[in-house]
Amino acid sequence: MSSADEAVPVIATKPQVRMQLPRDWRSQTGMAIVLIFGATVMLVPFFWMIATSLSRKANSSMPRVPTLWPADPSLFNYWVATANLPIVKLYINSLFIVGTTTLGYLLFSSIAGYAFAKGRFPGKTFLFIVFLATLFIPFETRMIPLYLFVRDLHLNNTYWALILPFLAGGFGTFLMRQTISTIPDDLIDAARIDGASEFRIFWSIVLPLCKPTLATLAIINVIWRWNDVLWPLLVTSSRDLYTVTQGLALAGKSSGVYVGVALATAVMAILPVIVAYLFLQRYVIRSVVSSGVKG
Image 1 (cartoon, rainbow, N blue to C red):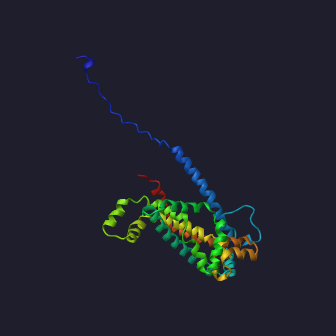
Image 2 (cartoon, rainbow, N blue to C red):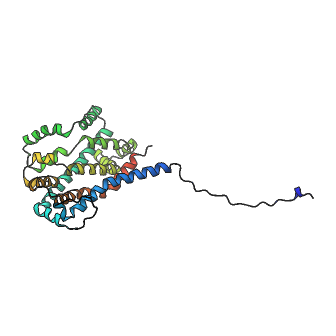
Image 3 (cartoon, helix red, strand yellow):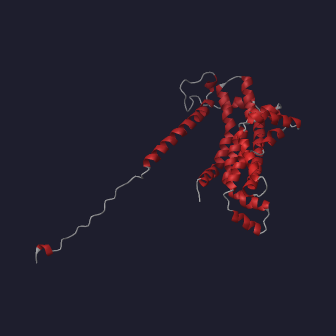
């Protein structure tokens, strides 16, 4: 037998596994760097504001180099801020006004959005365009006619003057209409066949499916109403109706500029907005994710 006929032993070798990075790792890394940079730019001034509000020396001289923690941490500025202002009354007014307007805004925006999305009536497209047109009109241009209307109704220096003008809006109607339009008509028709009324369909089927959008709209409206200063200054002169931002603005104007105290009041003013966002952020994220899913 020749050597060519002899069996040649075959040595099995393990396949070499190479670690491969995703093809788009460069873009993901770049996006992460951009997001970290943006978060730093947004958060550093906020932490600096908190640190300065805890510094007693900030009222006499500001540090040349901003620090994220004061050398003399103290709650003195917060004590001064609460001693000079009826902060509890201001918070009660703001929470009542913001809470009432937000609930009304969500309710009326949802009803109007449902009517424009699933209703059938003459002039629906034209009326929806009119609602959209209000988004292009700045509030300052309609502020004086709105003030005259409120004055003619004798609502000045009342909670109604701070609540009624903001119970509905074009933005909320547009956002809810776009969301409700994605709900299948077959689902609503099936409920009608089962004998459900329009209000039952709206309350038990449509609204639960719109929770992420409602949470997003709630946060936006809370920020708008909580930070509003111009309209409360225009329609109220009674200190019993002052909101947090209104009271802080007038207090700072009358007592001069003390940086530590001013930043302490600013921290107290924005805390409810931060708490509201932390409470509703999971719905906001769900809304953003669902809006990007098609099909």
